[in-house]
Length: 484
Image 1 (cartoon, rainbow, N blue to C red):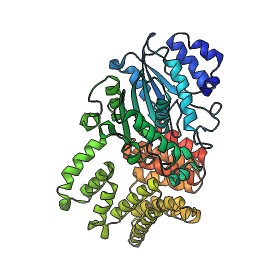
Image 2 (image 1 turned 90 degrees about the vertical axis):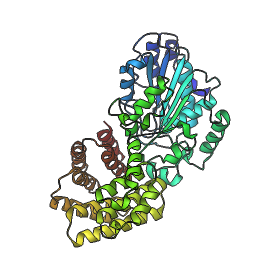
Image 3 (image 1 turned 90 degrees about the horizontal axis):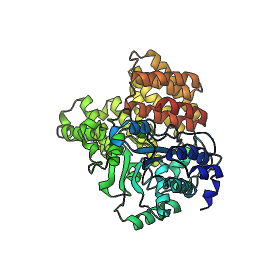
Image 4 (image 1 turned 135 degrees about the vertical axis):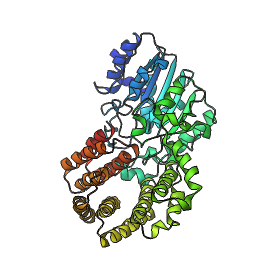
């Protein structure tokens, strides 16, 4: 294939050598420079290899960290080498390091992956492919173009938009037109047709597609529904953190471990409490709390709403809030309702959802201002600042006005919790004071002990805000703070 010409003579000669040397030299060749990381084999002669392929805003060094380390240290997974395959600007001129600089050609990247696989196949009898986000699409395209897939033993996708994304959504996020990702575009439509025709829901490898329960970038409908139910799973975390487990007990690692260990129940792990899977807990909360909905206090009701959302039932959550008594006078629940509309807007880019979110936050802000409730004022004001920035015609004046209002009432509030600190951080973004913003984000993350839901919410607002402000260099720094 044409992409193979990119490989240097040095890499080709090294490919004839031993496994560890192949991996080390292959890195230099396929990346075109000494960037990225390949974790070397633990033993010469290993016949199994895990290949990680990154995606959105990713890179081979950090996207999956610390998953490679966990795999290497797991005694039951002895015999697996690890390779993190990256694509860089010198070999892939259309791909940027943090934000795509132009329309990426996923087919071209898949050919690049195939070139790597042809070298790997000379030294390994089993290859496990693990893709995050767009990396899963790269893997799918490569498998469809691969004549002999007998050595592919495992294929796992995490947060992969296999059904595509709505054009308006990713244009807003990446500030350019990414045709390959359009759910109505030629690439996605052809990919789905060819995949279904080739496999018909029966795979010659261990397969799983995993959705992050807090993923705001790739809807569950896109990551899970293109595949049969028996291959679907969930993991705790958002789009980035779902492949950054805090421990070996986290769901994402356990799914990988069980799959590599050929445990026939590898997809049943997310129902187990000891795997710390939030989705399983949400189902328990729905069953327990839903049966006594009218008797719940505000804390229990809020827990029930988040459980519905966490299981993908955001429309049901909205309906339950709108039909409740609490929404008539409780500004906290008005904000929660506004927040559900905001989340729907971020995924579907529907202007009606944006306006609904603004409407509820405005109403809550007016009531909170009338009674001078500072903690509620900064909560609703900072969300309005965000929403004004998200409008097609960014209303920076209203955004900054709300940011100043939020900051003033953070000072007056006596809560001093991590949400107050995170509000200061976000407000300083809108006021163009990045150093103050960064300082408060670090403090907020520490205060909440990196709680998954809290840090995910902070991160989503921060990254979207940086995009809206066209401060992509800020975005990269904040990504590092949140995911490392």
